[in-house]
Length: 352
Image (tube, rainbow, N blue to C red):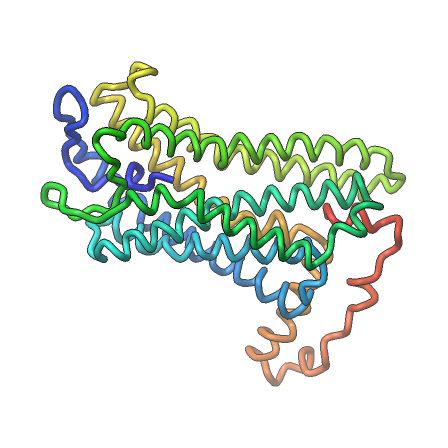
């Protein structure tokens, strides 16, 4: 993800036929992005940290779904860790040196790509559990979940390598920047490759997997006799797909327009300024998806809400109100209500 485009640190762009003033773009970024990034960091950090704590303390990582949810939360936390630095960068210039530039770029990209891959794995996990329930009993093990998670992190690192290698901090005009610097002889190749890679891995691939898997899930759910649970599951499926598309499609479209400005007839100063402003808005919108992940993939589920309630009572409310009689009693063990379910409900509960 080319965050340097969304938060330009230059006043004039010399890459066009005539020098193009970018002062207004930088001024808007300095005012708009720091508060927005701060909100994304706060809400995303709290939500994903709660997911990690509940999965470890309450659910005990007893299924492949738990493993993927944990890794998705960790991916989002890696991604979010870099946000305060980009907020500072947007407000002024890069003051953290070249090594921090590459290190934070690596965390950002690895968190971004691994988050996408774990959303894909969660989608496929739901598909197996519902459409191929018999096969899933053998395949959906904690061991297999850990193995596929390890492979996923390796793939995310390889997908991030070009961005890490070519990103560096240097003086540009009166500002220090942290941005990609491709070899002059291969500049257009790498710039186009990076943009197309992000669009394919960040939008096309996950949407393709969602459409295929959720189509099979919907066909299976429509045969379910429990009409109320069926409607809830179908509604959640559409929410997952629509939310992902709304949050990431605008950024992918603007990224393509910005990368291929000449092809779309947008290689002029006015259009370039508008595209940079659009990048600021759409990339920030995409970033907020990591705040939505805990809500969609964890807290929407009825069982996860119960775990959250128990966790809040045992670890938060009791410490805040030590003398309140309501919290003096041990929180009831919900093993039977949380862990136990009839065989008829087991498959749908993966979606809910």
